[in-house]
Image (cartoon, rainbow, N blue to C red; front, side, top):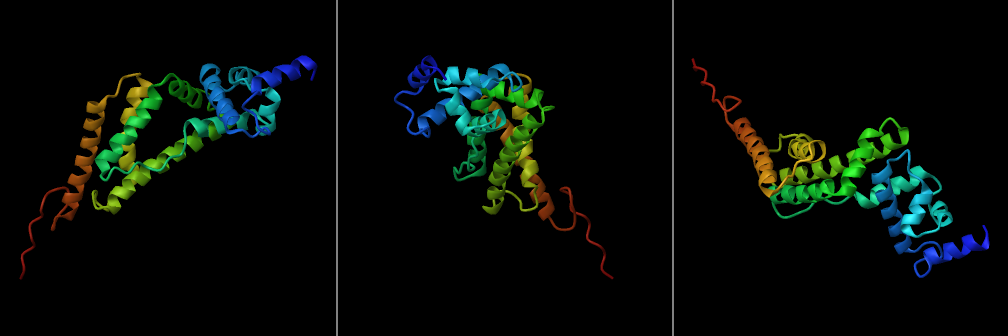
Amino acid sequence: MGATDRAEGTRRTEGVLTGGRSARVVESVLRATAEELSRTGYAALRVEDVAERSGVNKTTIYRRWPSKAELVAAALAAVLPEAEPIDTGDVRGDLLAAVRQNVALASSRLGRGLWRVLQTERTDPEVEVMARTFRDRQRAARTKLIARAIERGELPASVDARLVAELVFAPIASRVLTFGEKVDEEIASEIIDTVLAGVRARGKAEARPWGTKGRAARRPDRR
């Protein structure tokens, strides 16, 4: 590296780099990576462009993340963090809060770009691993939210927590990400209320004696 490169590296990281491990540097690089990824896609992503966008020397980036796959995986984990399910005190409030968060990210330019990459470049084995990891994290958090509602007695114990979560979030994701439609509070509430009503109705039907599917069977004659 020449004197010019060293000077440029100093300007890029001056005031934010502390032993190559500054939290501000990490945040800047990961954010820049996510933005470049959403703009160019995985195959065309270049560390040089991340360095320019973040203002952090390329050598510093490679020191912490030796491969592009490691860098992108870290960026996705930072932008799409694994979070504990929101606890508002009731399942409807929990679902509404979770939907708001998901819609806000999915409706953003960054969110749409990342989603496009994870869907259109899954033939790349590295992207497939990242997409599967993100999907599994989302599914686990949403399933946990429903499972907690079952534990609180808000939903029947017999329901499949994962299925209930998918029934809520799948149509919302379809509207936002597939069709580019807006999902406001009214639509989100309608979807959530419809799913919860169906789940609770099924629970009541299963709890009735002498029958299933909401119809009481005739008692057999006793002889």
